[in-house]
Every structure is written in structure tokens, then in C-alpha cells.
Amino acid sequence: MKTSEQKSQTVIYLAAIVIILAGMKVAAPVIVPFLLAMFIAIISAPILISLKRYKVPTSISILLVMGFFLFLAISLGSLIAESIGQFYQDVPTYSEKLQNLQLGLLSKINSYGIPVDIPAINHFLDPKKAITMIGSVFSGLSSALTNTFLIVFFVVFILMEASSLPEKAREAFGAETQSIKKFQQFSDSVKKYLIIKTLVSLGTGLSAWLCLWLIGVDYPILWGLLAFLLNFIPNIGSILAAIPPMLLALVQIGLGAAFGVAISYIIINTVFGNLIEPKVMGQTLGMSAFVVFTSLVFWGWLLGPVGMLLSIPLTMVVKIAMDNSKDHHWIAVLLDK
Image 1 (tube, one colour):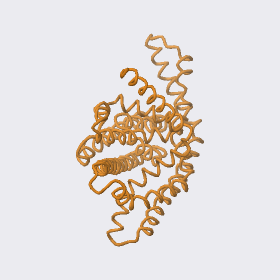
Image 2 (cartoon, one colour):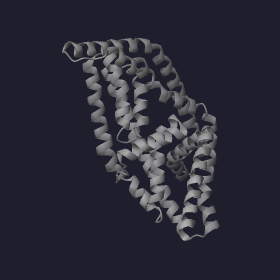
Image 3 (cartoon, helix red, strand yellow):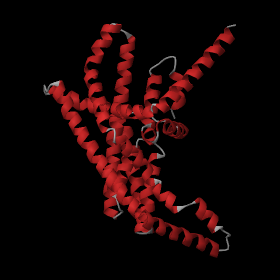
Image 4 (tube, one colour):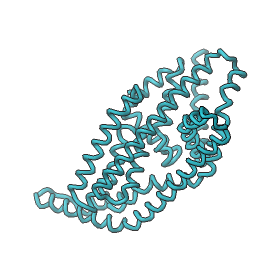
């Protein structure tokens, strides 16, 4: 009898999860701006606290912080739109050069007596598709930034409620309740992770931009932005960020430039990812490569391109929450390396 009840509960839980995920997928246009707002609110919280220390009123502090992020979002959106527009104009040129390189390489392989079906390979490895696919992530981010004002309103209300939330929780659940302490630990862990990861990603993006600018690769700001965004995805993010500028350097300048880009990205990600980030963060908060890839696919399917970019922060939130729960600590262990 007990076993049948447990089976019934398991079926109910699984059905509830399926319904929730289906609802999230349908509501993605609203959920994505809200998640971006939460992300911005967590990052901007220390700035807000610093302004309060200088006795700046809360309303003025929020206006200053949001004015800065609004300016940043509008500037970033216009930069992405302009860069993508110019990039797509040059796509035919890049595609033709890449196709010529591909044909030359396949012909050379044929000359060594190795049979290669050139038409079949050209069909499956279409250079134009490889080039145009690069802009898909930026297109998704650009469409998300069209909800800038909605995101700003979300952030304003979140920051306004954040200051009074601890007092409300103490009044509702009591000053000494264990739940508030656990929530505070969870909140501090998430805040620490997101702030440090954002700063490290910013350093990675700026370094990538500088290296590509020195090498002479087109659109260095665009690839620096891509390095910043994909640095939130450990293990495979740095590899994905390096592929587009390497391809572009190959077709634009030559093999030496592509090699220089590869070496630059290896050095940047070694310094920031393997030396600075673990030292500053105190612990890696890492996940296995399988979990990283699975979360990338899952959040990308659920929330689109922005979900892919936020996949690791979202999974880290789940991991930290499970790590602070006795009943679900085993899930955090499975998500760990």
C-alpha cells in the first residue's frame, strides 16, 4: 500500500514538473526579461549598498543605477545591431573565401591519393551556414534587449522590494527562524558567484577585444562581447567563443593570424579561468562537462538563445539551493565535478 502511494506521488511530481516546464516554455517571452532583470539586480545590489553608505536616498540610488544600466543596454543594443548589420553585408565575401580554402584543402587531400567526395562535404559543411550561424546568438540577445524598458521596470521593483524583504520575512516567520538564515546563505552564495563571474567575464571580453584589435581581425568589439557572454559557460564556452574570430582571421588575414587568435584565447582563458577566477572565488563551484552541456541544451530549448547564455548561472542557482538543503543535497553532489 505504501509503495503504491509512493509511486502515485512520484507520478504526480513528474506530471507537475512537465506542466511547469511547458508553462515556462510558453511564457518564455516574459520569463527571459525577468531572469535578465534578476541577473542585473543581483549584480547592481553592491553598487546600491555603496551609495546607501554615502547616505544617498534609496530612490535616487535606484535611479542612478538604473540610468547607468539603461544607457549601457541602449548602447549595447545599438552596437550589436550595427555590427551584425555590417557583418551580414560581408558574409558573401567571407563565405566565398572560406569555401575557396575548403576546396583547396580537399583538393590537396585528393592529390595525396586519399579519396574525398568534395560535393558531399561541401553539402554538409556549408561555409555560408557556418558564417551566418555566428550571428544567431547576437540576434537572440538583440531581440531580448528590445524589452529594455520592461527589464528596467522589473529591476526597479526588485531593488525596491529587496531592501524591505528581510524585515518582512522576519515578521512573517520570526527573527530566529532557520529558513531565513539558509535563504541568506543561499542569496550570498549566488550573489558572490554572479558578481565574480561577471567581473572575470568582463576581463576576458576586454582582453579578447584588445588581442583581436592588435591582430587586425574585423569586428573585435563583437567578438569581445561574445567572449564576455560565453565565458559564463565553463569548459566549452571559451572554445565556442574562439571559433568565430579564428575562422574570420583565417579568411581575412591568413593561417598565421588564425594561429595567433588561438594562442591569444588559450592564454586569456588560462589566466582568467584557471588562475584568477578560482583564487578570487575561493572555490571553483564547478560542474562536470556533461552537466554543462546538458544544462546548455536544456535551458536553450526552454528559453532560447538567452537561456543558453544564462544556462550556467541558472544551473548554479539550482546547485547552490540544493547544496543548502539537507533533503536535496544529493542533487548538488550529482551536479558537481
